[in-house]
Image 1 (cartoon, rainbow, N blue to C red):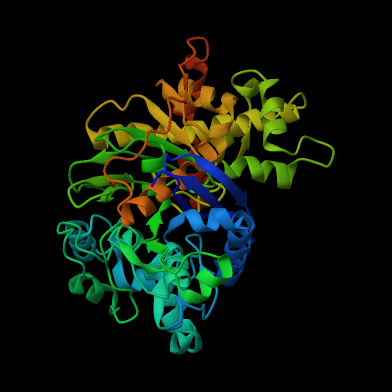
Image 2 (cartoon, rainbow, N blue to C red; image 1 turned 30 degrees about the horizontal axis):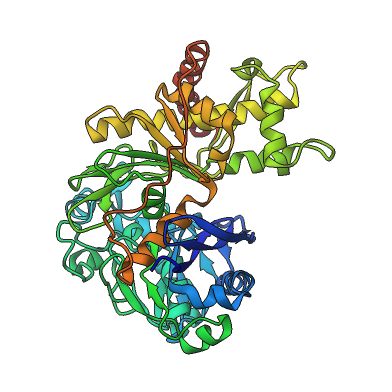
Length: 510
């Protein structure tokens, strides 16, 4: 199918990207939209799932305005954020807002279910979860278990109207197909499947019982990358798609980034520098490092796993300093900010930035951790502040990277960068020198996930083999700079100390 196109959606926390990818894995066209997250002091962090759908349809119409393009679309695929909950009715229409992965209002209910004296957990419950699934629900409530428990205890009207609790990627998949579905991968953040047995498509009754939930409102599990069904007739007519157009299972952005970065071989490593950040590679077995919040979860097939971890603030830190600290008249675009940072020296003239703007998960799970600047002086410039942000985010990745290498049991080299932050040559160079590893800037890193989910969509209709994705191209290689390594090594060593100091200060000031 040399003329085939695949309509794809990447539903990130910042908003959806909608794209068209051809049979060779090249992005033909795409549009990007932004959405607002509603925060409140009680831990609320919600988004409007109806707004997502409106923007996705708008973007698809724009891309498919050419009838010839619509005719060529063979399949549709969705990737994006996970660890969030969209309550929907039997038709897939939201019955309430999406509780995102940042929403912590379910914390008291999660702690009641699995909390205890050992690192905040009941040891018996935690060990059962780890043995079966590889991880456990967060005692902060910032995952589907906490979100669903919160809804069921605090919002009976929403629950009464709800047929399914869906992850965002499964919600969009249902809006497209009319079918409720999920996979071991899309449900990874709930930790409710027995990941020792990836061919068993059911939720684990033992784990459900530990938190007091049933599978009544959890969508049926199907194989990763399979066909959910054809596009709903109303959607096909609206977008001009053929009624035979297939919808593939929704997949997390972790899996899409693995495919889109070309790191599908065992231990091939990618680092995502998006709103959040993570470091991952395929590994052969299920494993958990509970101390550092690292685990291996269902991967691209039933024989392998992917390393999972998450740092709550990645490239989002650059948007934060632009929006919250810089006055009008200063550089405002991504390229302008990174160009400004280049005018400061390596080490930002002593300024240090701690990037824990939304707490942290890996390598230390602490939702109350907070970021900030240190070593400011009357001579500190805006360029120093921006460069310190780039260096602080990279140092945080280096802190996690050491634990990921230990988890994998080997040196991970090279590291392929994806995500919006990876568009910056300067940031890629900072990462190479901070990690002391060659870094590969993946081709078109902003849309790597779109390429990845397009391959899954193609495989769902038999146009490609799931285990042989197209290569993303060689990419540009950044080697560690011998003149900067010592500076960045010192910043990376200092960051955990600052984290522990901030923790001690917080405890002493209660």
